[in-house]
Image (tube, helix red, strand yellow):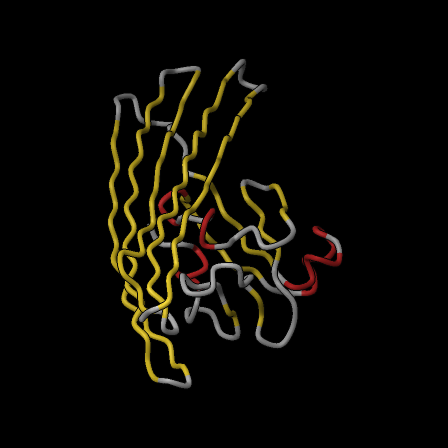
Length: 193
């Protein structure tokens, strides 16, 4: 699936995001610092919304909020704005529901020796089900760079992301949600001859 950073890039004035060609670049405002990420009400500092761990496929709602008043909720880091996200869950799916999504991206970069093409494809799959007092969503995504010409190098890479989101209802007042996420990537790069 598409990363949140790529979705936001170019959609919100003065907000710059990471890309597949520079995944370590944090989302930031053009004139000042980076907004914090708030996921299911929990704030995260740092470059949480990098390409590897922020698949749009796994989120229900995405909102970008800006304003100095946010510092009263999130401290000084909130003064640079907030990217608020809500994880998808298995709630409400009385029967097993499977989701799939596939995207292909074509980008190019200008360099001193000309334009370089970057072709990336991504695939996402998820299983959702609500068993009554327990609901779960299990998702897997991969991002592929089949044959990329990036500044005179051939790059082959693949990134994997796996997420389990399970909720437990113990009573009307007590609800526990456990979220496990892991991601890793491999990339081989050799110089062109």
